[in-house]
Amino acid sequence: MEIRMRISIGLLILSILFTGCEKDEDNSIGSTNATPLTPSNPVPGKATTLVPLTTTLSWSCIDPEGDSLTYDVYFGTDSIPDNEELVAINQSQTTFDPGTLNINTTYYWKIVAKDDYDNKTEGPVWSFTTAWESGDPPINPRHGDEWTAYLGEDQIPLEMVFIEGGTFMMGAQEDESDASEYEFPRHQVTISEGFWIGKFEIRQIEWVAVNGDNPSAFYGYPNRPVEWISYNDIMNRFLLEFCIQWRLPTEAEWEYACRSGHDDSWFWWGSSYDDMGDYAWFRDNSDTGYGIQTNDVGGKIPNSWGLYDMHGNVRELCDDWFDSDYYETSPLIDPEGNDTGSRRVVRGGSWYEYPLELRSANRTSSPTTSRWRTSDIGFRIVREGF
Image (tube, rainbow, N blue to C red; front, top):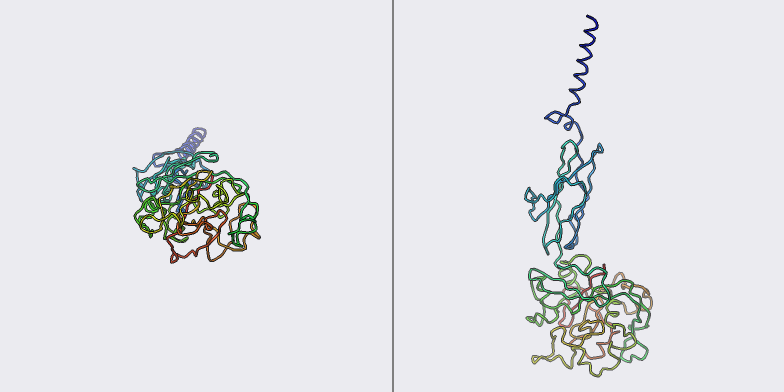
């Protein structure tokens, strides 16, 4: 009797133990297992700069008890992602490639983290906006390679040329009789990295594609350079719509590209004002029948590296603060100008000016404020190498 009682008690205990270990239909173990922490550290999240059209989503997530996690990824243009935006289920990676994105589009995404016991934690909705340009530049470009980006809904072409880094002599030569004192001393500069630069000055049609309006004094000529814009207009309106790799050229990059391997002469074609009309629009040849003014880009002979209108048509803003004495202390590698100032560097001369002001070394300046605009200042842009 005593033995049977002991056996019965033992079986009862075992029954209780096994019952407690079972994962029943109500997921009793899962209900006591801690849920994953909220997904965090989104890349890209609420980006302060526009995101390239090819990007990878990534995030972080931790389970307090070290359980392995899987993720459901919601991604699309709906500000409240639902099942129509469910693009991946039960993936183990904390990255996701959405493929090539649309230009100038805001995307929304969220992550649902799940552990081994079907505990779920839904993350917040993150968002970012893509840039205006489409079409990725070539991988490992070489000097002289060309690439076309496309702007806005109408996909307006923006033609770019790749310039390899190199070393050149910057500034005026001693025999450059029309040079000003702030074009000296002539000094060696190294551009350490290659960069893409506009084949042409930014045209009115490209400005309209990005900003929707046309501020130009010579309004209504889509292939003429945009003008009547300031440095602040470029930075706060036009370039603000691009991803972070886009910018104005530095003064050193501009002169390096302008000289195109000819830093021993006043212009890339020589040191004479003769035949300048073959290479540039300036005061003596810019009369269109309605007075002197801008002309369509690309109408003159390009320089040795395939860049048009580096001399004349419109002066071109650079990113550097202007300093008349900067060449005295300029770094030998990748100079970027002073940290502060009141005026930005302007290069290249214009339709309004005389030949001496179109020399490769000529330096002028312009205030940054949007209240300071003229019809002879425009710009071309740079995209950094990859």
